[in-house]
Image 1 (cartoon, rainbow, N blue to C red):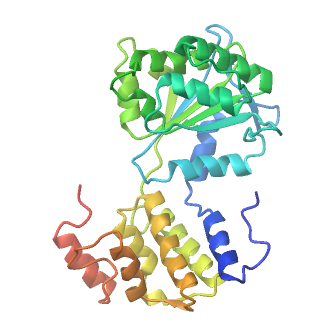
Image 2 (cartoon, one colour; image 1 turned 180 degrees about the vertical axis):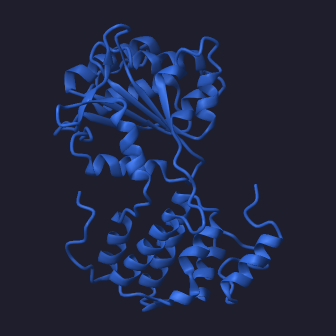
Image 3 (tube, rainbow, N blue to C red; image 1 turned 45 degrees about the horizontal axis):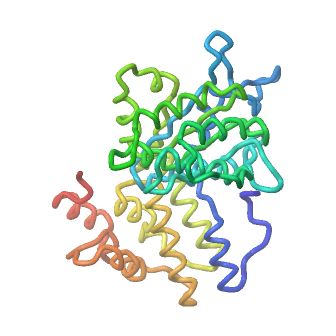
Length: 325
């Protein structure tokens, strides 16, 4: 899917859909691509291929662990990579593809994850009495049958949570066995920082050494990421026919309000834009932005969208410990 705008949305529905589909870049895209170069083979021109790196001595592929707090934009970053990557194509039935993207439900066990993979790859004869180890053997076999070279497991920390019916050592083993599959599959797992802690709990440490790590950073004030966020917000507002007063520095206030977390900042920025679209306004004011923010942050005496000068507001909020955790 192209990230450039080919047509200007006109109706409210068109504008809403355009805003939903719009991906805002922050510079982490290049960092992710750099990590991908380490787990895939390259051709003679130095271009990354879809073929996982494979060590013939231990017969294993490489893994990548993407870590970050909830709301830091991990999922959007990975999904965007699949949309625009020249060699990785998301697997969908019936057209196929070489990369399977799975989001783990909060209550999923390791057996349930294997069953999800089987279903997503077209295997419909799942026996309810099937053991987890057998389900995973089938899943790994399916990778070769349908041509999957990369497995992305988002929200992977869910299968490593303790509780009734959960087997954390078996879940860790299942991840390791993916990289030992005869069909040579690269593994990308994403989750909150506790994901790394759960895998590190393995006594031998064998599984952790197979992963490189990538942690998208928060957007720092005055950074290149902050400048890109401001441009993204301004460009989107302009295309949607919305005026934003530059002196209100609304993008900077959004980043401050969300403590620089990429995903949460984008969510709030888009919600502020959407609120103006559906109410048929032609501008975004601090009052409008604050109204949106307070709907999910009630009871505050002062917010980053207070009508006073931004330097004054920021100083007062900083003085009372805003955003410290």
